[in-house]
Structure formats: C-alpha cells, structure tokens
Length: 133
Image (cartoon, rainbow, N blue to C red; front, side, top):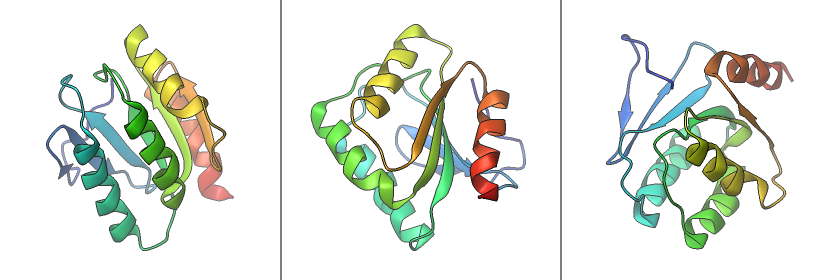
C-alpha cells in the first residue's frame, strides 16, 4: 500500500523497511507476511529509540502484510512506542491487516493519537497536524 520513494534512504531489518519523508514522518512497511517475532520488533524499536534520542515522530504503518501478533508483541509495543511516537496512522489494503492494526493499537489507551485510514494520502494529511503542534 505504501512504497518508498526511489530516493529514500531505507532502513532495513529482517522483515520490515523504514524511511523518513521530507516532513520527518517515519514510514514502516512489512516486507514479509511471515510471523514477526518479538526479537524483530525489539530490534527496530530499540534502533529508533536510540536514533531519535528522545525525539518523538509521526509514524505511518502499513499493515497490509501483517498476519498475526502475540500478546507479548502487543505488550512490548504498548510499553515502547510511547518513547518514539507522537501520532500513529495505519493503512492496510487487506481486511486482516486492518483487523490486526486495530487490535495492535486500539485495545489499550495510548498516550499518542492513533487512527486507521483507507489510503496513505489521508494518513499523511492527518499526521501533518501533529507535526505543527
């Protein structure tokens, strides 16, 4: 659903790629529909906690390839994403991805805004209001 621009500096992990746009929105795309492990999530989360040095960013997540999640992963994300997330927008081209996104971010109250979108353009526009704040 989302694709990195040709000139984007990609940050690659085993099952995910990330990049920043010119507004400093962080994009995340799963590149594998295989089950993501807690180790995969920890690896990129710890990377961004270190890289951002306390700064919080707007994040656009593409859940189109996400198929499953564990309670351990959801709990970890719930405890660690507040360290990096200002707002999180989610998109998915699949019903399963939409369900997983809602499960991932809407079961618990988060200290940052979250919202599901039908397309990346709407998600980007929504995130921009948090960049100005």
